[in-house]
Amino acid sequence: MTDATVIDGKAFALGLRQRVAAGAAELKAETGVVPGLAVVLVGDDPASWIYVRNKGNAATTAGMRSFDHRFGADTDQATLLSLIDRLNRDPLIHGILVQLPLPAHIDAEAVIEAIDPAKDVDGFHPINVGRLGIGLPLLAPCTPLGCLMLLRHYAGSLAGRKALVLGRSNIVGRPMAQLLLGADCTVTIAHSRTRDLIETCREADILVAAVGRPEMIRGDWIKPGAVVIDVGINRIAGAEPGKTRLVGDVHYAEAAQVAAAVTPVPGGVGPMTIACLLLNTLAAACRGAGLPPPPEARP
Ligand code: NDP
Image (tube, rainbow, N blue to C red; front, side):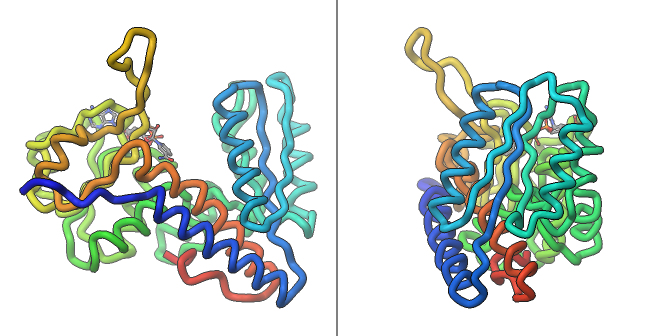
């Protein structure tokens, strides 16, 4: 097989953002509620600054209120917890996102656990993790939620398909596996200790790669006709000296020769993450106003 379908996450995310904006406008017209997203950033990592700015801009473009809270790298945990407490009680705020990683002197778990689970738009609070685990998701983590949406759109019915999630992190691999289980896939989770990894990959109808290893998954690891979702974002040396480029965890050119459909990097999963953050913020605002969340936010 050649010429796999390119899963255009950029276009899909744009459509999702437009639907979220329409939903936010409807919520405002019906109830006067404007969804509010608070983004908390500690430290001065330039990449994190850009992420936070992009998230704020995306929220504003979708008709939401965006509130940035920036702290120096030496900010203490008590200051951060006091802010979270204030945001939890603020009726203008429906979503709280703390940009990770936090500096080493701050206990990230304690900060995440301090967020009201109803405002935890990243879906990292243990209550939201647990709810996903028992099949009653409230707010699902954005990147895996985005992957599931792409799969539903491009792979058709997921029920009974063999899905392999490569990676078991709390932010991608584990919640991804839970979402696929919720979609009635037969799910395998692989990681650095998995034996016969290549053989295991070759059995998958759906392969989600979240390892953080540039182009690790080669074409001959992929079952012909499989759908491949590449979560990895890796910066490697480019063709010209001093230049770099982004690649995924999957060798895209080889995968495209074998798979039925595959996400490119960039332009695949990446744009879905912010779109799903907005979707979760809208869902939290709807619930706060006593209305059902958009169906898309209920995996
Ligand atoms: P982590 O480093 O937290 O987890 C990586 C996982 O891959 C671990 O479970 C690890 O196994 C497994 N792994 C590592 N090496 C191997 C190997 N050689 N063979 C098998 N398994 C292996 O990464 P994240 O989950 O946070 O991120 C994964 C990738 O996704 C990164 O490239 C990241 O940049 C990207 N990402 C993209 C996002 C987006 O918006 N598109 C959002 C979040 C992440 P073990 O547990 O045994 O160590």
